[in-house]
Structure formats: C-alpha cells, structure tokens
Image 1 (spheres, rainbow, N blue to C red):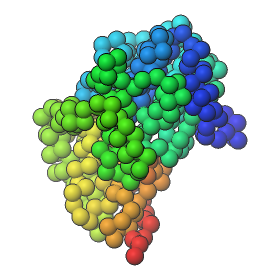
Image 2: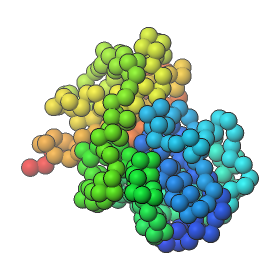
Image 3: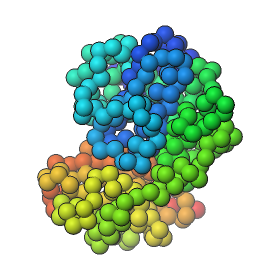
Length: 350
Ligand SMILES: [Mn+2]
C-alpha cells in the first residue's frame, strides 16, 4: 500500500450505483464475526442487487450470532468455512469494514480482484482493497451509507405490496439500531433518527426486531455474564470497569463466543463507570479486549475508546472498539493495568 493512501471516499453514491447496475452477479462480504450492522448492510446490499434483477449472495466469516443470522432468509448468506466465493462474481461489495485484518479469510481470493471491488463503510480507517470507495465516518451505521446507494439506484426499500419483513428497509433498520445501541449512543444524531423515521414509515416492525435481536439469548449468556461480573475490578476511582473471562469460565458457563456479545455493557448501569472493558481469553494465549464508553456529558470525563483500543492493536469507534493481544489473560492484565490507570481522558466540561 502506498504511504499516501487515504481511507476516504473516492466515488459518489451515483458512481457506485452505476457500477452495481452494470453487474450481473454480485458477492457481498463484511467483517468477520458480523454484528447487526455488518449483517444489516450485507443483507441490504444483497437485497438491493436482487431488486435490480442481479444474482447476488452474501458471505460471512467467523462466529455468527444466531439472532443476527436470523435476519437473513435461506439462500441469502453463505459461510466462508464451506468455501470461498467462486469465480463467477463480476462485482464484489465490501460493507462495514475496509480493514484487511477483518477480512482475513477472503484475502487470497479478494486481493487480486481489486478492480471489481467496491466498498461501502463508515469506519475511519481501512486499507486499499477496492477500486471505488464510499466512506462516511459521520454516519452512525454502515447501513446509512448503503442507504445513499439505494437512493441513487431509485429502488423500493420494501417488497412488492409494501411488505417490510426481510426487506432492504428492515436490514437497514437492524444495522442502524444495533450500531447506535438502539439510538442511545452519541452517534445517534438527527440523520440517524431521520433514516429510522423513514424506515418505520415504510413498515419496519421495531418491536419484533428488538425481541429477535436483543431478547432472544440463550441462558448460557447469563451464566457468562455472571462469571464476568464475578471478576469485576474498578480502576481510576470507579471510572473504568474491567471484567475478565478466562478459558475455564467458558467451560464452566458453557458459553460460546457468540454468547458473550454485549456482556461488556453490563457495568454501564453504574454511575461512576465511564468505560467498560471485557477481556476474554477463549483461545489460550490470545486475549481479546472489547471497550465501550459513555458519551460526553453527565459531568464526567470522556473516553474515546477508539484511541484506547489503539494501545491494544485495535480500534473501532469512539464509544465501541476492540483490541487483541497475543498474551495470556494474566500477561495481558499485567500489560493493560498500568496503561489503563495512566490513561488521561478528556476532562469533564462545565
Ligand atoms: Mn458498523
């Protein structure tokens, strides 16, 4: 990659729309372990291509939360563990990431195809993987950026007869709602609410989606949460909460990797907590860290966890980020504790 590479838009929604209109067989991919926005933007893109009469299929990689998988209809998404996409695709659409490390399983297939790859994302950093990029970090979700392309294509976001179930609109709402913590994060700005309003007016059923995505966990999730809370430690006078899940905790709780998404949020109910961190060592010798922070305000200091995660080979967004170190839990904690204790947040205002 040339050093001058800038991960910014180099194409307009209309240029992406033209590229999509010209294809016959599209393949849509997203980051490993897809979250609601990754799956939402992937499905929105697959449905958008199919609405235009194209062949289109999505691929996912890594652990997929069954609730997130349930957004898809049979035939819309394949798992890459059953084989990389074939040679027939004349267009590849990457959504909700531009980072080589998050697309690792695809790289041998993806990298030689750069000229036929387009990318739709809302992250601040990424790699040079696509000929055309639409990158809008000001958007709360990748589905908001996909919405720009759908508008440029001038297609309906719901099915014939106005049915919103498993439509482009529903996939977009799922991405928007989950990436904003159901409209609680500071990223949920007026543009996010405007799109939400438009999607609800099209008939998206938010109550059913909420239940499907947020109130449909296995009991093992609660067991893993209990283990994590049992390890809870506070740093910086209670402003940083750290929880740990070790290999034996996974055995004891019988939790699978997909059961622990969201466990990191469970300390946020505490008033003093500005940042919540969950360290997990599932595979021995590799400790993953997930970071969440509260938005500016409340008379408390503000932590940009994208910056904090950068200290642990990671990144993401200001209020949700991840990192990963090749260390056991004890080694990772020995490394992390002084960094976290010494981290200077943005002071509280007023
Ligand atoms: Mn996203």
